[in-house]
Length: 170
Image 1 (cartoon, rainbow, N blue to C red):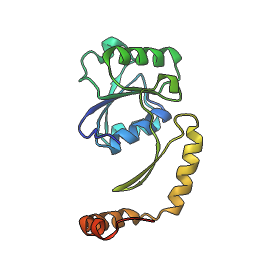
Image 2 (tube, helix red, strand yellow):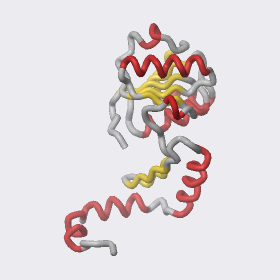
Image 3 (cartoon, one colour):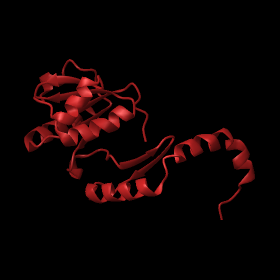
Image 4 (cartoon, helix red, strand yellow):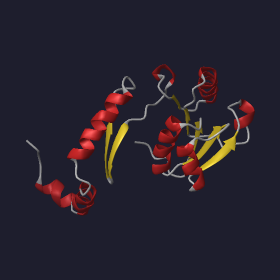
């Protein structure tokens, strides 16, 4: 839950996992740059819809030299050496980084999200089991009607009145 609207965020990798991470940045309104030698179908979709900027390259200090300093970086490649290089670069630059599926190399984690905007529910296992978090997300999505977002908006218009009326939920 950080505001990254109009902030530059960087993703290293062009595959399915990288595309899932890009989805989160895109939904949060970030300006997303992807560095990858190639893009898979999911990431090509983002590119074709103007949701990402693609730099066709492998990660290197030279590859990021001309970019705006990113607010956050995600490395989601199958190459351990690249992921390690991204992590060390970000540590030196004081940029928060997440190396997908490697919690030891994460300054932040990305929870599974149930989006009933403006109500957002985040599910986390602390990076221990993303699959379990996705299972819980799927269950919650079936239990929480899509209309809850409209309800949250409506209740928000009466926020002070509700706050004054309901002192405790006990």
